[in-house]
Image 1 (spheres, rainbow over the protein chains, first blue to last red):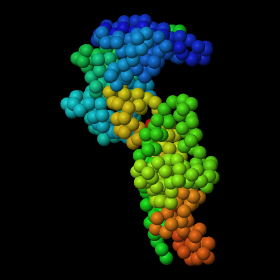
Image 2: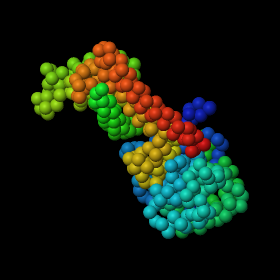
Image 3: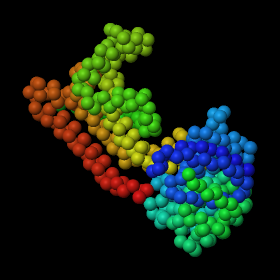
Length: 206
Length: 223
């Protein structure tokens, strides 16, 4: 069970607004988060991952407190180890496909399986600059999964994929999430594309 | 013709560059993250040699490390170290004088890397140091090379500050730039010309190397 109750001030084009989220997510659930641009969807994911501190709030994950502004508890991102798929992919330009996964895990069999899921087996020596947008996006997803996260945060993870690849990947990811017992939060501008994957949804508006 | 000044200059530039690389990388990383008043003051101090006349910096270093009083006296009495009119004094002065040439390019390059690169590394459980060594430093190689070459080349050409703290002691502190000045003073234009040509050639080759290397690195891999 993941419990989130946070307040974060946002500078928007309408002036200072407050993002307020109080919500629980069942372990193993897959939730899509959607809403208009600029309402703090990405900020919410970054708060959960530990990249941004909110003004007020409590986050507990499986009875472990990740954040409690009242008692000044703040677990750093390295201790949270929430898998994160960035909107801009955040791939490391100096590493090839295999090195990205080896940086995250030393489990060789797991790396091979991930490469197969993402259909990147033939591109292991390629650095990001020689990958297409879709290939980069798949690598970003595989890297986040390499640590076998209990919580996976995905910020717009599929727009660069072609429909066939997207359907195939979503099918395989669903099996993988079940197997790992991963709780997943997915921010998307196109919630309809996640109908087959998600079990829950959150609409955010300020 | 005495070739020792060239050798001393290369030795001074090499040691200074190595020391500054060791100090400069973590310092530039620290400066690149956030802006506090304390950081602004430190950065201003590091940048001062860019605008301060070298003789002024040399004068204050001479006073500070004079064996008659202050830090200089304390260092001599407790550790038998004398910075004034010695090679280690030249190294100290060069490190301070060339510091902005090492810190500037590295700090700027680190600031231009997307924040998400560090965050991605942290989310994989990597420490700040692991992230710095494995992700950040490898992705600023062109700027790192520029910083190293600028520092080395700048140290080759130092004059005022090394003259003030080191004087003109043959085989100890008489570096090439001072040898040029000294040769001209003695109307030995032939020696001055040789020293100058060697310095010119070394600097030119280094700068060309940077331009050639960076030409192939200009396009950001993130584009």
